[in-house]
Image (cartoon, one colour):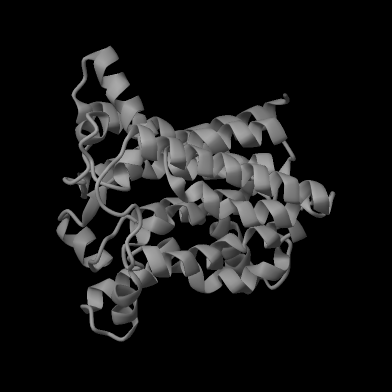
Length: 327
């Protein structure tokens, strides 16, 4: 590694560490642990559905607390900081596949803004930042799942089959949203072999179903795993909820979602196929999630932001000079 390359990596490591520290600090400052499903509740099998089955991150935090003697909130903060640093660093590597270094650095800042904005829940984000009041709940598995999503995208694009299945299983113990990547898996891998892609889609779905079945039998909980949210979401679009709820929805991806369509044409073909995950997730969440609770779209940030970045830079520069030659 030459001196220039070494200096670039040192600068990126420092930038990722600083971003992770600032974003994590603000996130913990302005959020509270969700009172209905705390880490202690999950570990002691007292949490309701679906939170009881999202157990990987809570058990890691609990184990860290037991090993170090730290309070759960401190262990959660440190775990979140490490995850955040790894997320920014891995996202930098992902961006460098598509963009030149300067553009990739801008992408890191967009991710930081998106993570902060998407923590909002039914409130006016800007007002809360000015008043420094709590604006939402904190879930231990959210940030970890974004990191897992990004790892799965790497393995998907690089055809790392064994690594894909290993991480798919691990991430499903953290949160069930791994299912959302399966259509993109089929669309991308069918370019190599359509029958093989169909087989991997079936196996991946079987792994997901198997883990959900295992969790449901080992840790039975009362209530439905997914509630019907159709009427609540219809009310949101009809203006029957307060204005802050609709504003929260507009803050998806930090409010930069407007630039996403403009960047689509700049993206490589496989990345365009990956983007199918975004509308698919919104369609599914219309039935099972509160759309104004935009943290449910956290994982999509690492998929959407590259296209958002390309759209933003394309409008400013008018060409694709910001793209990496490898893209």
